[in-house]
Image 1 (cartoon, rainbow, N blue to C red):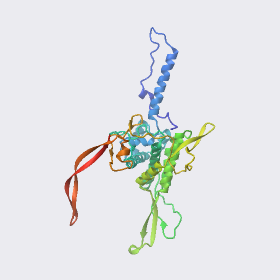
Image 2 (image 1 turned 90 degrees about the horizontal axis):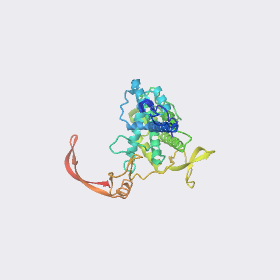
Image 3 (image 1 turned 45 degrees about the vertical axis):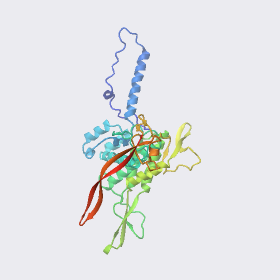
Image 4 (image 1 turned 90 degrees about the vertical axis):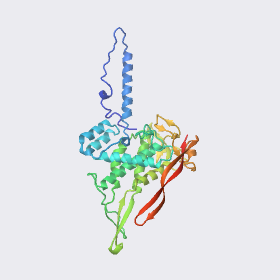
Length: 388
């Protein structure tokens, strides 16, 4: 859970009109208990409203369509954004106030994570989107503690570290640059060029993301573990790139540097970790949660590079408005596949309908000297299969 639940819950006057009780009504006996009940009811409404809008899940900025290219040059616009959108904790707001150019990085990181998540799960029952025809991305889904929540934490944490690192390398952040540190010397090649400073990106992402988690709860410990597992994976996936220098194509000198992995590779790797994620339970000491451990002791202990979760997932077959899940009805499936995209699994045993479409496609393509490709246009019948 998030520590800072009371920050910037707007001004109450902007949520509720000034509260001026007109009690006791004339000709009625006024009850002190009635006043207390009404006051408690109002307080409960305020707390529910504040909790709804101060979730501290920074990656929800992916729900917004934002052009943040010039935000850091317009301090008033940036200030208004932070006050109107409560995706950030107070700690995160302070970081952004002190580094206005970070906003574009954060928004881009959230959108990269969203894109890769939806790409990886596009054929699964849960496809990393929660409302058809809507800009809402996570809905009320990102605080349930299941496998999918674990993946969301991981992909967003990795994406923020990745994006900060990439922006540093491109010179688009004034606070950092590329990594010029010379590592262990090798006899056949030397370090050079501009390595991407993933350690800086990880450090900054950790300071921004992890502070929002409550270390005294199972959910907070789960998120912290998954955030760090994703960052460790990002560091482990750094790639060495080399270039040869020499006369007439010879490789007299070989210069190498480190480069970030593609985010698609990170999404796929975290997807494999999602499949192997461990169900864990809290370990308490004198009533205080200290750590998490694997629920089933017959399996190996959880290591720092595993994803963990604390609650079972729904089956995602049917629509569930409270979670923002729209189910699999109306989804396209593969009739011949026995995998997760196959009609048997994706349609949850409800069956499917076949729709025939005639589409135009390029066909009979030939290379014409020089230098073009000439194609005919053919009408092709396509069968589509849609879950009941």
